[in-house]
Length: 271
Image (tube, rainbow, N blue to C red; front, side, top):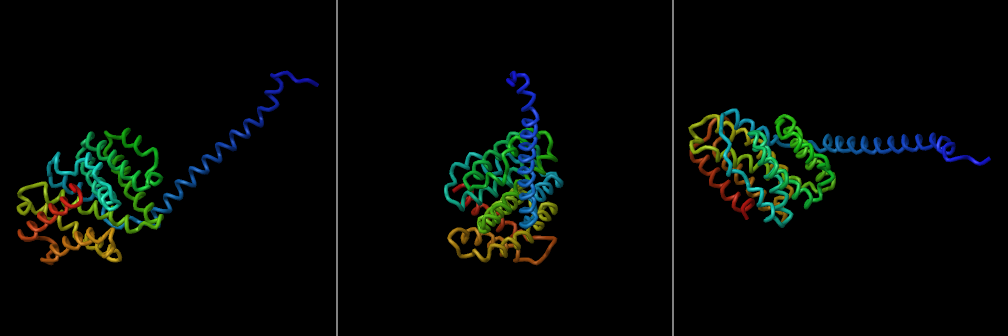
């Protein structure tokens, strides 16, 4: 019996439905597995230091104003060619992105995220960040709370991904960039730093994480990739160690920290 086209369509329709349903389920399962894998990575490689937002939020709480030219210029991303400079400045830009986000500086948020995207691509971390993150950030420029979650996730995913790839040393360089930039921002937001006990408190808040970072980096203290950054972190901790107080710092300490961070900036950010 010869079937017309209309009849044939209804005969194959159930098979098409089954195929589309199976394909849809397969894609959903892939996406679910991918999201589960990322979650497992984050749980396995827990971000070991304080968030950049912990520092920038403290700055707003002490009513420090946003300083436009204090952070690393987004355009500097084109100057970083070595693996070390890319990793360190990825961390720097994460701190700068947190700073801009905390103060609701929309144009700066966009510029810093583009710089981060560039370095993420260069360091082969695109899969960890996710294709949709850029769109989510663009869509939530007016929602600081959501931006904080997205940027925190970015940091966690990058750290977990580098460790999963066996690139732990590189992950510590990213951490170092964020930690050093956070301290730089804190020590350079006011000419009267010592006279403001809240700023001193914020500086001291970063002491323990930097000590932990030094411990994490010790296995790589003499490698070509990490030696110079390790020495920078160690030098900062030596200034902290000049006084054991957890609630005050001397003028000499703050002046040394400020000068040391200026030098670190010249060697890592400005290049």
